Image (cartoon, rainbow, N blue to C red; front, side, top):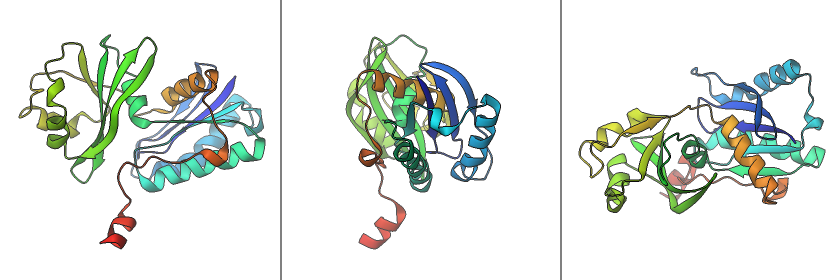
Length: 230
């Protein structure tokens, strides 16, 4: 199965092409320009390098959030358009699951953390079952101190690891939390390859969907909605 995976959830977004779970190409850059505006330049480059075209893909995988409101909208809109135009399935993947899936430590409980800006973090707890991850509870957004306090009951778990591509967003709060002294595994912010692998597994289990059912999980309300309601 040839698939295209898109992550526009953060400024360090990325694009990947996979054959089943094997990565054929990955592209991403970390500059001030938002990734959503670089997506189509990177797509043209990737298709040229691999001598491929959009209609050849059997599956489109996409980061469904949490992350940048505008970035997610651009990525989801692009994937919706391609999937509808070519009649192909879509797999929506959580950004936090893609963070947790990169953990190399063989523990069963993973706390995934991502910088959410505005002094907050996105976070979630995942349980590892073989090659699969199951979300425990809900994905959250709050100040890092609040997030760690909400998980204090897990601090005594030995088979636990904190995983993040943005360690600076959580390390300060760790010192005054029940998780003090716990190591933090830093993983890559280029998530498209992982999103592609997770998307392929969803499709293999019959859990992919169509363009109409694709939606974002922002976790945090966008600024415009907050201002309108206030």
